[in-house]
Image 1 (cartoon, rainbow, N blue to C red):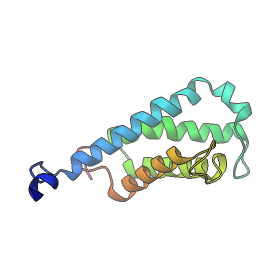
Image 2 (image 1 turned 45 degrees about the vertical axis):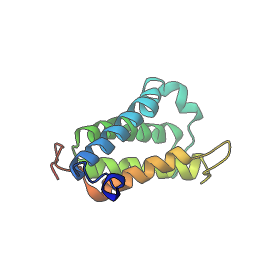
Image 3 (image 1 turned 90 degrees about the vertical axis):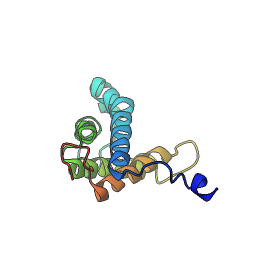
Image 4 (image 1 turned 180 degrees about the vertical axis):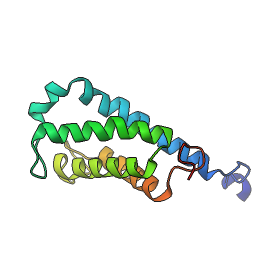
Length: 135
C-alpha cells in the first residue's frame, strides 16, 4: 500500500521535471504577462512606475525583456540561469513595488511570489539535460 501512496511505480526524472517547470513558467509568463506589455507598450508606459531611479518606460522595457525574451530562453533551456535570474529579479521587484509584499487581499502578489519561487528553483537547479544548455 505504501508503494502505491508513494507513487514509486512511476519513473523518476529530474530532467523531465525541470523541463515541465521551465516550459510552464516560460509560456505562462510570456503569454499572460509579457505579450500584453510588448503589444501595448505605449499604453502601459505612462502608468508604469519608475524604480531604481529609472523612468517608467525604461523599467517597462526591462520587464518586457525579462517577460518575453528571457521567458523564450527559459522555454528553450538556453542560458537558463541568466534567464531565471532576470525573471526572478523582475518578480521580486513586482512583489515588492507593485504588490507591497502583500500575499493576500485586493493587491495580492501571490502569483508574483509563486513565479519568483519557480525562477529561483531554476536558478539553483539549472535547465536539466532536456535543454539546449544540457546542464
